[in-house]
Image (cartoon, rainbow, N blue to C red; front, top):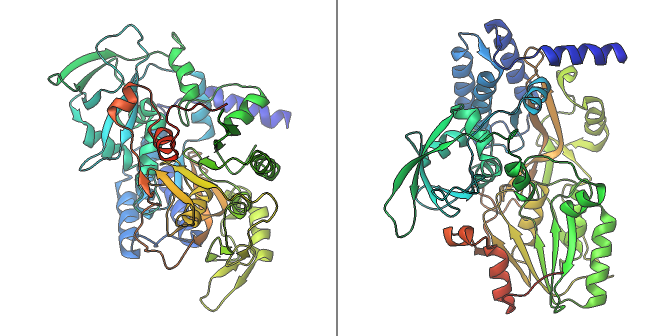
Length: 490
């Protein structure tokens, strides 16, 4: 292990992102990825026809005619894989690239933005400017262009490298918003000066320069990212990390509580869910807000447990859960292939349709819990990061008596998505990693298969005024509906 660790450290120390890989290496990695996807991906042709998928992959293979850097190759693969339209399928950097990037921070585009999913084209709203003494660019401004490229072109270009469930682009918008400078750099490269077009209410449009921001010289942006959805990682205590993952807060009036769940995994255990509903029952809180805006999924059983505290009648969480195969191909390149192979072997059963169905989750009927069942009014807050198990939960709860889904379209599909087992393919030549689900889940076969996420009952999209005033418009709307505007939570 010491020898292996030493070799890995030496490789990482020698790694340079500008190095290129020969065409033969790139071709071999791409061929392996295509073979694995054809063999084991459960939804390769769910939203895109077989002829179209073959066309896109053949076109990519033909375009590999010259050596490429890892970033160039990663972008090429990401744009190709995005045609599958599966949010659980995507391409990541190699471990060496990530390690290098974490040690060599470089100046980057300075502004954090929020992509507003408005018609006819999404817009870029400035959320945070790290140059605190700058009076030119202000939160709430609309970015109309960067270095001559229009905002719509920038968003469309970035979006093409991100995989989404069907046509639920809000997931891609939220991911880009989570770290716009990094995404901009990956797609368009770096500059020392950026010319930014601005539109502001009551003033004529203008264009002004702004310097690249150096995180190593000024840490204020890194500090700001601590509170930004899915922002840069930073060190916290275990208690602080758990608080960031989940909490229950009750308003001083005792009339409304907020249950924040950033995930259905990690620190969000079933005991926390049970304890929360015990408190709600004892305090007889009449209104409950469940905040899933940054919940990207996790353990399905935890989401089911939450639904059992809220549902009034028996329910089925997923109609069908199945895999194309019971035997994984190319196991040596798949993460956790041994465990996943065991699961496929012993937990699935082949049915008449030729697929291998996961008996534990598929079509299972669940009963509402009697002890500490919540019978008050429920508001579920959603956004682009409401994904996977969180979007399945939301789809199940929408339309239930006393439940209002409020916010933005979920990133996870309303009809279904991939999941249960998510493996990672490591391409041996470049070290690039590609995620892939092993099961397809259909939530409700009677729902339209239109590729959309769960559409909220009450749509609330942040306005420029909200951003300018640092207002949470979704929570504000909930309080207005409850009749408690201006209330505070403790």
